[in-house]
Amino acid sequence: MQNRILIIDDDENSRTSLEFLLLPEKYSLETAPNAKEGFRKTLEWIPDVIICDIMMPEVNGLEFCKMVRSNPLVAQIPIILLTSLSDRNSKLLGLESGADDFLSKPVDSGELKARLRTTLKLNRFQEIDRSRKQLKWILENSEDGFLILDSSQKIVYSNDKASLFMGLKKDEYKERIINFKEIVQKKYSPQPEEAWTTWPVQSEDTKFYLVSPETSVSNSFWLEVKSLPNREERMVENVIQLRDVSPQINANIIWSTLLRSMSHKIRTPVGGVFSSLELLSISLDEDIESFKSYVGTAYESADRLRGVVEDIFSYIQAPLIKNSSDKINSEKLFGIITKVGKELQVEPAINFETDGDFNLGFSVESMEMIFNEILENSKKFHPQHSPKLEIRIHSTDAKLSIDIRDNGIHLSPEQLEKVWIPFYQGEKFNTGEVPGVGLGLSTVSLLMWNIGGKYLIKNREGVKGIIVELDFPLTPID
Image 1: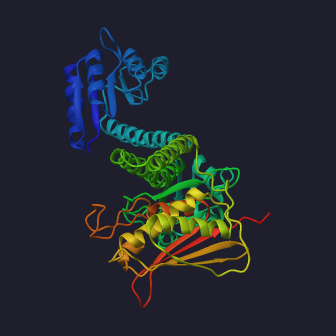
Image 2: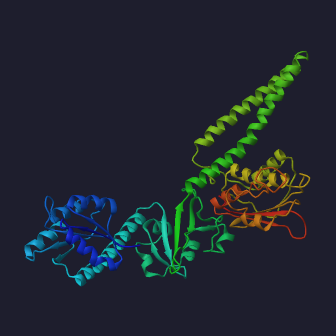
Image 3: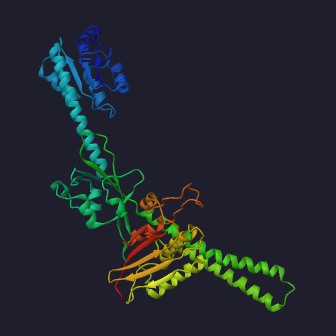
C-alpha cells in the first residue's frame, strides 16, 4: 500500500515542485492551496504525512497544526512545516503548535526524501506502539481470559482474567516455567478426557472444557477453551481463549433436567384425570360406589397434578439442583432404578457388587435424569424395543461405579467420539425419530462433569449392545 502525502502550500509553483521531487518515490500525492482546503482533505483522505507551508494567508501553518492536533481522528498524523525562516523562535512556535519536523525553503531534494522516510518509519513505530497499548488495554479489561503459549506449551503471556482462572500470581508467567496443560490438570477436570488427549489439535465441532465441580458451598465452574487460529506462518505462539460459560451450562442442566422430570411427573396425573372423567361420563347409570370410586380417582390425580405444578415453580425458582442436598445410599439408588424402569416398562437386572454401604452427594432428580436418559435410549434404539439390561454397582472408599449394559446396537466410531459433546445429535437424519441413531446422552455427561464424575460409553465386545460406565465421587458416611 502506497504511503499518502498531503502537500499544503498557497504557492502553486512550490506545490508543483514538491510533487515533481516526490514522484519517483511512488507516493500517493494530494495537494491543497490553503489550510482550510488542506484540513478538509486531511479529514477525508487521512494522509500518512502532511507537508505544510507556514506562511499562508488567512490560516497559517501554525494554526493549521493546532486544528489537526485538536481533532482526535487525525491528531496523530505527522506534520512537516516548510519555512523560509531559520530563526529559533519560529521553530519553537512550530513545535508548540504540534509540528514534528521542519524543512527550509528552497527544499533540498535529498533532505526532503530522507526526512519523509524517517518520519514514515517513526510513525509506523508509533502506530505499532499505540496498537499494542490499545490491545493491552482491551485484553486487561476483557471478561475472557487470554493466554499465549510457546511451542512447548509454556505460558508466555496471560491477561489478568486468565491469571485469575489459572490461579497465577501477577506476572508469574514471565518466568516462562508454567506449562499450560500441567496447570490445567492440577486445577481443573479437563472434559471430555478423550478430546484433551489430542490437545492442542482442535476441530471445528470439538469443544474443550475445564470444570471445577460443585461443592457444598459453591456451584460448578465451567471454562470453554479455544485455541485461536494462527494466521501468521512465522508466528510459533498459540493463542488460547478462556471463556466462563458456567451460567449457560448450568442453565442447560436445569432446563434439560426440568423437562425430563416434569414430562414424567405431569403425564401420569393428567392421564389419571382424563381417564377418570371419561369413565364418569359413561357411568352415570352405574351404582353409587363405582361413581364415588371414579370421582375419588379423578380428585387424587388432580391433587397430584397440583403438587407437580407447585414443584415446577419451586424448581424454576431454585438456582440449581444442588447435588449435595440429597444423600443417596444403596437402598435409595435401588428405588430410583426400579422406579425409572417401571415408568419405561423395562426390567433391569440390578447387581450390587459391594459389601458396604455408600453415601452419594447427588440429587434424586439428577440421578433419575441420568437413568431416564440411558434406559430410555436403550429401549428406544433396541431393534425390538425390549432390551435386556444389566446394571452392576460397585463402590470403594472414593467412588461409586455403575456399569449399565444392554443388548441393542453398536455405535459408530463418530458417535462414540462425539456422544459426550453437549447437545450433540448423532442420529442419521437429525429428525429425532427412528430409523437412525438419536442420542440423548449429552445431559448425562454435563451432570457427571458437574460433580467431578466420569462418564464413558463404548461398544460391548463379542456381542451387540453398549456399555455405559459412570463413576461418582463419594462423600464420607456420617
